Amino acid sequence: MLLSRPNILRSLGRTVAPCRSLHNTAWLWCFRSAVSLDKIYPESDLDLTKPQQIPKTKGHNFSGYVPMDKVQVTYSRSSGPGGQNVNKINTKVDLRFHLASAEWLSPELKEKLATKHKTSITSDGFLVIRSDKTRSQQLNLAEAMDKLRHLIYTAAFVPPPPAVEDIERARRRHEAATRERLRQKKLRSVTKQGRRAPELS
Amino acid sequence: MASQGTEKALALLRRLPRVSLGNLKPNPGAVKSARRGRGIYGGKTHGAGSKGSGQRQNFMRLGFETGNTPFYLRFPYQNYYKGHHMRLSYAPLCMGKLQRMIDTSRLRTDVPVDITQLSATQLFSINPMEKMGGIMLKDEGIDHFQATLNLEVQWATEAVITSVERNGGTITVAYYDPISLQAALNPMAFFKRGVAIPRRMLPPQNLIDYYSDPKNRGYLADPTEVARERFVLAQKYGYELPDIRSSPNQEMLLERKDPRQIFYGLQPGWVVNLEDKVILKPTDPELLEHYAS
Image (cartoon, rainbow over all chains, first blue to last red; front, side, top):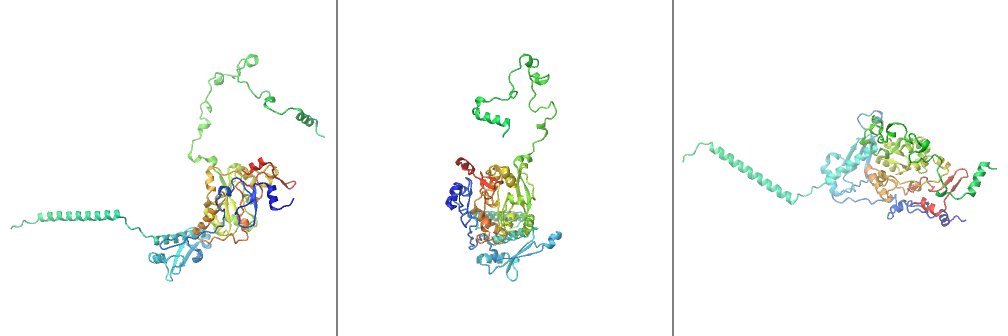
């Protein structure tokens, strides 16, 4: 019997069929049961290597995406107790990038960062974040990334304008306070006048 | 020439009719009559024994131990034992040990590394009958892990997934029921039994969510969603996700088992004959349907 592809398929039975996009390469035959991934997710293309859309940053809306090739990460030894491990292993992470020339941030965000977080910016214009929280370089880098995102989000945060009811409430309270203050003032004045000697007209 | 006993047995098989309910009876003494004993040998105590609550037909309640605290009341009900019979434990494997196994050539990285490969290193004792689910990967040594491999374990945390993916590898968590796990841990011993490869069962209710979650890289999760989670994790931990498509090991890294499969390249229903070095496959459509269900 010829061992061509259709013949192999027929001899192995209908449970064996070409894999749908579990690989992007050559045709491979594999076993597919009733609970295989293509039966559980019939509309999906089942591609583990699918390239992802990079979210864009516009204006004050930071997408959260930080391109790692535009950011410089250096490792050094951490401080504090820890014996041989802290003496030898580079667990401290230093994350920096030049703020003015960062294309992945919008001009508005850069301005906000420069004003709000100027203590984190060096004289050369580099925004620096350091982390030596944990014993692991990997986790420290994650912490540094989290700090960076927090910096950007807090800088980008524009508090919403106060609601009409809140403005109204504030105005009423202010007027009530003024009225009360003037009333107390009047009362005090009357008391003080009563202590004076009567005027002889 | 077969023995006389065998010959007689075979002769019986040839001439006797098919076994049915109409020509079966229990062995003498197997079934005890529910009736009260009568007559000389069923008389005197009439099957009720001597004195006590048994003879006086005033039976003690089930579990009563004539006054002392009975066994079923001796142990208090504690909430921390709730569901203990369903909880699985896993043999720990830290990333440092995994790297060492690879560096000392105890583990191959050119083939997908699953529980069978890890068990073949003979560095773990996993007993499925003692409610062990397999192997779990631990966080220690994540900074020193440098290998690129296709890993399949039973439990993995986020930091472990990161350390595997940042080096260009892939990781999946997969469930093996006790029988499948026993087969996977020692395939040669399983094949020597000469039984058909069973279907791997799906996870129980308390684990199905874990294994369907793309964040955990579950084997029942949608690979497209897993791709998205890989990207998100790379951003969280601050590394560029290596492109698997341009890797030379692309095929090996993306190789996955079907949820019902125990061994790579072998289907449920097949019988592996190690002696004659052949694989026997079922041809009956009913069997094929069952093993593919």
